[in-house]
Structures are given as C-alpha cells and as structure tokens.
Image (cartoon, rainbow, N blue to C red):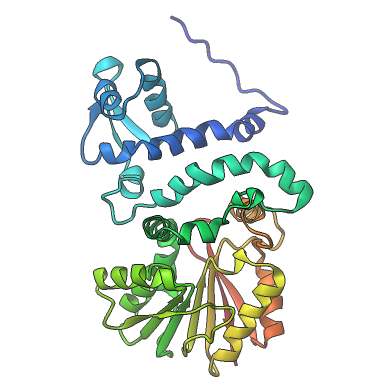
Length: 349
C-alpha cells in the first residue's frame, strides 16, 4: 500500500473544532479504562490484547480498538504489532492510575465516570436555568450529601481529590516560606494529605485539619499512615458555623469555589478575623487568569460548579484580591503551582 503525504493545508482548519467537539470520545475511553481497572491489571507487567480481554471481559470485536485508541492517546504503550503485541502502562498511568500507587488519582475519575459524565449532558439546560443538573434535580442528595453518606465512597473520593492535587501541593510546600509561623490549620482539610505535606516540609510547625465529622476518621488514619499524627491533629466542625481552630496560617484547598460570592466573602473574612497580625491565608484553586483567556481547566471547572452546586464558581486572582481586601487583608499574590492550579495568598498586616 502506498501512503501519499499531502502538503500542509493553509487557512482555516477544522482540526481544533473536531478535537474539542468530539472530545467526549477520548474522555469516555479513559473513564471506561479506569472503571475496568485496566491500568491496575497492567501494574508492573505487559499483556497481550487477548490476555487483557480475558481478564477484563472485553468482547473480541472491541479489544484492539479500545487498547490501540489508548496507545494513540498516550495512555498506554505497546511493544510490537498484531496479536502478539504487548501493552503496558506509560510512566504517567503507572503513577496515577494504578490503584497500588500512592499517587493514585483514579478516585476522582471514577466519580466523573459514575456521576459527572451523564450530568454534563445537561449543560445546555444549566446554561439556561443556572441550576444544578446532578442528583438534586430528582430530589436525591447532592454531591456532598451523597458522598458523605457512605464511608467507603467518602474515603475513595477524598483520596482521589488529594491525588488530583498532589503536584500542586508539592509545589506549594517547596516554595512557601513558613519559617515565621508556628501553627497552621487546613480548613476543609479532607484526608489530611496537604496537612501532612506541610508538616513534613516545616518541622517546626504544628497543625490541625478542620472538617465535618464523617471526614475525621479518614484524616486521622491517613495522618497516622503518613507519620504526621504527632504534629497534626483533627478537629471537627462546620467552617460556616463553628469557630476556626487557632492558627497563624490557614489553608483552603478547593474550598472557595464550592460557594457563592457572599459565602466566599464570609469564609475569607472569617479567616482574617481569626488570624493574628502577620498571619496568612493560602487558597489553592484553579485560579482563572484575570483576562479569562488561558486557564481553560479553571473555566471548565467553573462550569462544573454550575452543574454540581447551587452557587459555586471559580474565580480570578483579581476577584480574590477584592474579597481579601474587603475582609481587611493588606495585600495578595497569585503564585502558579502545577498545571492549572495556583495559590492565592492573602497577607494580614
């Protein structure tokens, strides 16, 4: 067979339109692979399509297109061609999608597959109504109520969220100078992963994670596993109604974007009031660039908040600065971390 190379086309091209418009093909292929635990099955080994198909129950008609599509997307590697070819994880999928890996972030993808994928099918309705399109539409519990009701689901969700943010947390802990501080508190501290990393990077600090009662056992277990339980404790409370634990550094990781502007302002003001002089508030989020042109992930995450929650939205550094100064903070900065995530830091005089 002869393959003819055509000269590169000039002028308008449909490539971007087709890649974005049909992007759900690639997304669902990855999500199904996670659901099937393909990357865990390939942990530390290579398997043929027949071996993979037998283990995962894949129909003969589907297995080669499924696996080779993942190769073409850069999510699997393949040695050889034809029936004897062997498939194995890439360095990225081995690190982040093998359930045996401590950096596993598949929990958030499992949730996306089980919930978000179908809810995003109603985005147009959300754009018209401004209302959530998740379980709330049918009177069922929403995101938080549903996840928090099942301890196993909650723990998986919290670990998945931490895996999603571990790169940003690592960058934050390696660059944030906390030498002038003595105690920190992670508001909405989830499984305690960030708190453990902050403690490891700052041996002089003690800290506390502050979250709802169902989260405390997950955080305590994880802090003990990570060797941080001697310096980081857990505190139970509702960050809207209960006092913040005393600290001179407050962290909020992916907290503010869940809430409407009034609630965001209230949480920032509550942190300011609780901080001593020269205290700081550190918010990690997919901060949208002020011109709202480049952080696509942050903008799409804001649409996800539209799908999931009654008032949540992501925001720019300029918006954070306005809210922080209204609360009384003297200055702010936005510090890029990893990928689309940044730290928005507010300083109290």
